[in-house]
Length: 191
Image 1: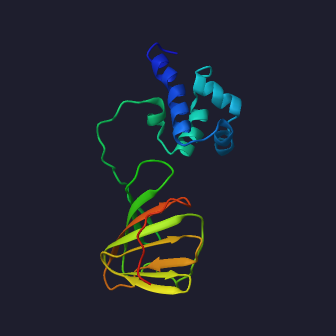
Image 2: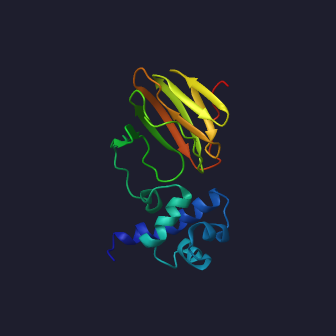
């Protein structure tokens, strides 16, 4: 262990304790969420145990912070998100967030008629919010069949059967926020 690493590692314990207290979690609750034993968590917070990557990864996930934040790494100076587009089933996804866990933001671009298959409503854990930047979006949500245009937004619990796509004639661009259950925006589409 280098001399330079000691002050950084010594500061991790108090930072972990502060994060846990800020979220009003007990050691037992944090242990249940991370799979790390209560005694190990206690020793990490008190500085009696050195943090390892194996211990820090689940803690960062549960606290919804980056590893850099946990260890107090210096700022990189560049706050920009360098999106790496992904294409799935004809839809281009541009991730707009870097933080693991929590609400994730995407810009999504749907060519006309995407997806091309017959609408099939699905359900899964989470909460979805989206805002139409351009084009038209068709949303099937339970019994509702809604068309949204530029400037309109929708929000729903993804445990409700849903499907959405681009009926055309031009491309559809939306901003989408997707997060674990309970993390919600407060904007709703007209019925």
